[in-house]
View 1 (spheres, rainbow, N blue to C red):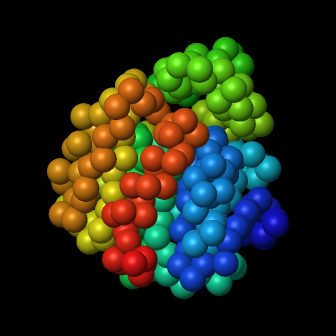
View 2 (cartoon, rainbow, N blue to C red; view 1 turned 180 degrees about the vertical axis):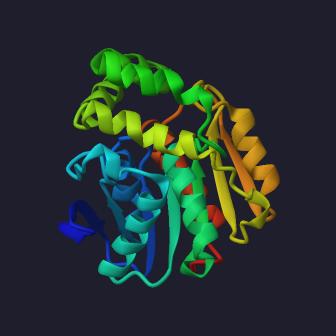
Length: 257
């Protein structure tokens, strides 16, 4: 379903009856499909909501209208439009960065956080993706996906990932990272007051495991779960394990027996 947010249309997807809601945000210019497989597994007991954030998938916007602040605004607009008063919030890669900003802005709207392959800041390491998006987007995406998915027998995931990312406009992809890098955000992780699950793969070369450990160490009520032999997108390569970790960590909070 498309919803109107600040003069733009955002493509949203919702699965399952609830009673509790899990809202998920994709990374960089990855659309909602990075959460598709976990949601297929979770939707029997959760209401699962996600969307193509501005600049990704079927939610195009002018590149100059992309910024971390606007992405957080959109997240709350999706919640309000879809009648979500409170939920568990998940973010993958830079989507976890947006989830952290949202949690700092209005922690009362969330029951907890799930941060997958998340970085605590967008810094100079994003420069190759910013520059590559403007010079040879297709080759940059090819390289990026190869680095994201080191798991064996994953050619189908790589093809899927390339197709997802290539839907975005190159300048939108550049601005998605550049707009955060320019602002030099430093998230006060110690001020995150929510129960948090950090999931990270040992073979993640995009966001190394040490950064996931840094987040888990800094958030007071955080748990780190490490997936051996796993790259940057476990939502796509290890969906069963991702769901098992989420439901174990938040069983009591969301009322599972």
